[in-house]
Structure formats: structure tokens, C-alpha cells
Image (tube, rainbow, N blue to C red; front, side, top):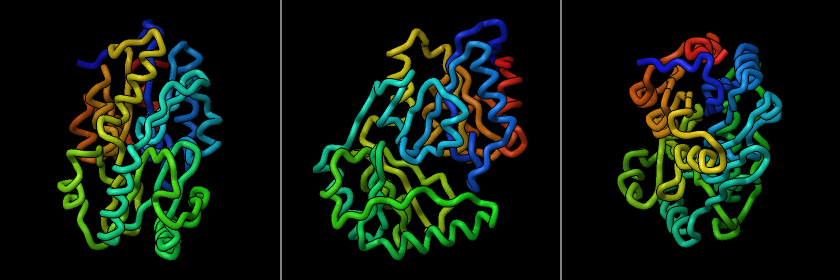
Amino acid sequence: MLPSFANNMGKIIFLDIDGTIRWFDGSVPDSTVYAIQEARRRGHEVCVCSGRPLSLIEKNILDIGFDGIVSCAGTYVMYRGQCVRSVSFDPATVHELCEYLVEKDCMIELQRFDQTFLLKRFVSRYEEMGRNMMASLGEDAKELEPYPGLVEQDTDVKNVEKVMFFSQKVPYEEIYHEWSDRVIMTPFSIPNAERWGGEISPLNVNKTSGILSILEHSDYSREDVIAIGDSDNDVDMLEFAAAGIAMGNATQSAAQAADWQTAPLLEDGILKAFRKLELI
């Protein structure tokens, strides 16, 4: 049954970024901006809940106005301007993981809330992937994220919160089978030129755990939570929320986890979802 939030103020809404707020070419529909700002004006709180590190959430998105930010898939969380959660990998685990991935010829990117890092050996491969991605997105696409910091080896980076990997040779499923009992792993949700890709977080860290850290610092409960997303790394929060909504452009896993689907992002999906829920 579809819950109605009309005349029942004080709900908290968590929105994924890529494929939900922002299309992959960098564009954000005006209707999405309006829906977020109008919901906040009416007394609801709206938070970002993204796999992106805080440093890679673009200014035009932050300028929309949000009450909280769950970043790096739940490892770093801000609420009402304060950091309420910061989780990183055990250094031994991230080193072992990176050694395994490099041995498998996977390109890796190390992420924490304030910066991302790339091993120097992968510079040419990274740049080629970027060129191919920009070409696939079209000439209207915005520039890619800031260039990552370059390091010689993974141990040069402290407090790693997430590891991204890209592979041309080793299927995602093989890596998942090897590591799924020690880390959280989901397929990469942004288009890229590599055959396989994934994002890896510390064990027991996901978007839902980030949401819970905000609930612990607020007067909201699970019954107040609305979540909207489109990809596999949104599945847990869609299942957790009182109302989980998948975008019309969602992956099969996200669509199955949700209570229902709204229209695609570029067809005013957020605005239509907010109206259906009677938030605005």
C-alpha cells in the first residue's frame, strides 16, 4: 500500500545522486530542484545518499540545499552541518584487497570523503577511460570530476573509506565471490569503458547504516524515511525505507527492492514521486 504523507509533516527523504538527482552527463532537471526545495519549504528534510565521496558531489547539487549528506556509500555522514559518522577500512584489509586487485590487473581508485587517489601505474588507463566516457555521454556532458591525487602504492593513502575497481579481464562475480565475506561490494553504477567495475566498502557499511546515523541524531524514525534511487547500491536503503521508490531508469535489482517506480529522471521522476507521495 502506498503511504501518504499529506498533512503529516516532518518526513525525511534520502536521494541518490547519479541516475536520481543528476543524469550521467551532469544535468539536473529543473523539476528536481523545484521538488527538493518545495519539500523542504513544506517542512520535510531532504538528504543526499550517494556512493560519491563528499569531495566529488558537485557544487550545483549542493547548492540545491540539503539537510544531510550520506557520502561514500555510508562511510562519511553530515547532518545539519555536523559530521555524525566517519568510518574507514582497516589498513591491513585495504592493503590486501588492493594487492589482490592489482594482481588481477584491475585499475583501482581509493576514496575518502575529502579526496580520491589513483596509483600512478594506472594514469594512462584512467585517462583513456575518461575520454571514452566523455565521448559516450556526448558533447553536452560536463567535465569529469577533479583529477585524483597520484600515489605510488595504496599504503600511501590513510583512512581509505571506499575502493573502486575497474576490470577488462576479471568478471565482477569472481571478485565478489572471493571477497564478499569480508567487504560490502556492489557493481559500479556510472557508465564506464571497462567491462566490469565495482565499489567496495568496509563490512557492514552501506547506505542504510549512513541513514541510521542520521536517525540517531534526529527525532525521525524508520517510519519517517523515504528513499529514492536507481542502482544496485541503493537496494538496501530502498528495502529499509518506509517508502522505497525506484527511478524509471533503475536497474532490475533496484526496481525489485522498491515499493514502486516513478518516471525516469529525465521525465521529471523526482517531481512525480514527490507529488504521488503528497510531499508537495
